[in-house]
Length: 204
Image (cartoon, rainbow, N blue to C red; front, side):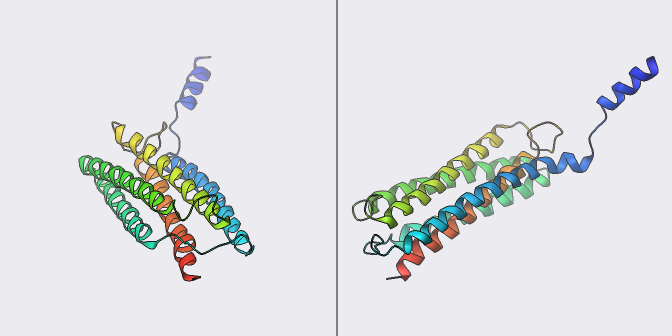
């Protein structure tokens, strides 16, 4: 009887495979990113479908490129900073990793501030009710801004954690998982700028 009980206890407390411990958080975030990617693809297809309706589609006042290009630089910079921080964490330089994480959060807030100024500058000539372009423009850019906010919340959560090492309990590899989401949001912004900003101005 004791042998059976000891065997049961050993199986319950037996460590999970190392590969599973290292990859489960990454796999979960990949599923999230995959889902979000298709949401953005649907929005981009909506953009191209609306573009075919020339009666309601207008390029009289496309968004200016100034703010958009600056925001590209801001988000790309944040990705480099966060990637550098992740490398420092891998080298067990946790303080440098935290500094990079905090800097990324600040840069993300700068992005949202710039976007609010951009909306203020565009609103007089381009509003959601202006035409189909204005409607889909604000739908996509605000949807992306919502993802930026979610990314900032994830990064803030990781910043508050006492340790960043891989763990068997949730959160799994928190720094790496949050960084994956942030890089995804940054890459999506490149497509947003290419389609909604550069593409609209090119059609002029």
